[in-house]
Amino acid sequence: MMRLDRTELCLIAAAVVLAAGGLIAPGWLVFLLTMAFAKALVVQGVVMQMRAGLVSFGQGLFYCVGGYAVGMGGQFFGLTDLAVLLSAGVLAAMLLAMVLGLLLTRYRDIFFAMLSLAFSMILFGVLVKSPQLGSTDGFNVVSWTLFGWSPAKETAPMALLTVTLVAGLAVALLLHRYVQAGVGVLCEAVRENEVRVEYLGLSPRWLLYSNYVAAAAVSALGGGLTALAAGHIDPEMAYWTTSGEFVFIALLGGTGHVAAPFLAALVFAVVRTYAIEFVPHSWQMILGFTLLGVIVFLPKGLWSLFSRAKAKGAAAS
Image 1 (cartoon, rainbow, N blue to C red):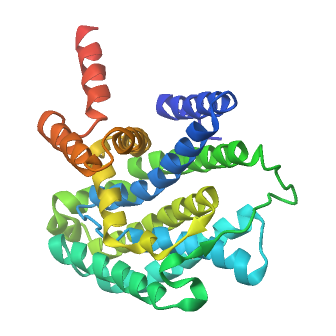
Image 2: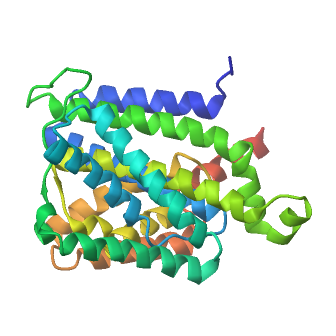
């Protein structure tokens, strides 16, 4: 049995505190937290690839696949169990990533970014031209159950927040172990010097391939949870602006810690919510200035604030 380190204990404690806080939080805040942490899972997929030296401008592809798998599972197959719906989305995204990854992992830099964006926009075009799937309007997601338990309308948002926190915690713990051993470390080596990795007798392409498939699975989980929280899906989930939002959040948080995407997604959600409320015609500009400020003053993202504090504490001791 593996012992939990300090980071893992902090992640568990944070999830427990957030779940407890959700019990007394107003409904709008519960929804905001659920959406933020669900999208943070998609950002985790972006960050996984950034650690390997790749930037995906098409992560909305797997976000959309996860969401539509949940919606179609309920709409066309009568499935309502949350675990089954989310599993279907993750499996569909992994199968798609296993096919696309054979092509995409041949490319690097801007070529990888543009190809990932192209595939996402292809899915967007297919969905827009599919009246059976609601075309541009999309369709509503059916009410969910969990192992036969159907939450009441009043308790469903809090129950889904709890599920999202549990899923986010599980992913964060797995990724924390992932980046410290095995493929995670080797992907960072590929980012630093791909040729040297080849000299070690390893295949950078297959390392990136496995990382790509894992990132797709995590992103699809976030898409499925978002669909359940919003109660609706539409082709905008695969649009380029959605993928750009995930890259924005990834840059906002940085790649220094598995908790960074969750922090950045929460900050992004709060800033956007209040920007839309107070300056509804200029909220994009507010977000732009926010990212600009982070890039100038915190080039390694918001998490570098904690890294600096930790370094100063270590130096003082």
